[in-house]
Image (cartoon, rainbow, N blue to C red; front, side, top):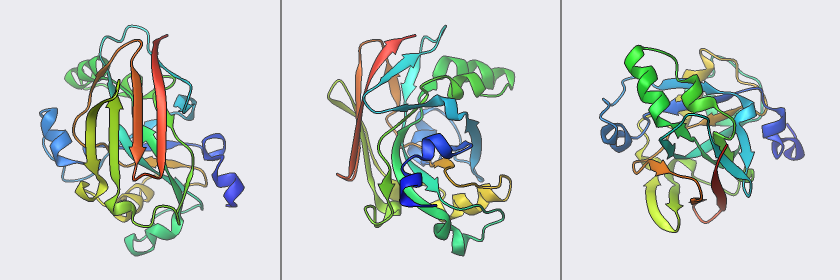
Length: 218
């Protein structure tokens, strides 16, 4: 895929594939066991919202949580991709948030229901600008941070992922054919927490990318 198309991945891609509990400290803070295999869920592309716009608290949600993540933008079609070839399918990266209606998720987990409402509502996938592969030389050792109202809440590094980027691409492609413009969200470090109407979320990646969103009630 050309660079100009890659920068428009949110308009071209067909799916957002997210990974849960990919940092052990994050799993622990929510009282969850460290997974032996990646936990995969989907978010609709209608959940994208770009930096400078507003994150909308979904109707009925009383506990909206922030989760900062490194996103992987896919640039060519592939399935059953060997781990050794996985990075050949990466077109670039993006700083992203996986906004989560935690009360919806907790209720769904108790009942054994899907997380779709908790993870896929409108504006649940805020993103920054596209980052080229050249700009992020080592995605497996990248500093991620997030602040709420200028107070640091998340401060982590992708080196602490349980499952590496090549492993995730290989694993996911064994079940979903990856297509140009698709986004893989690689999980969040510890420090997740609630935001409310009027809060301002700022996040950054390795001094390369920053984003800012205001939280509003839908």
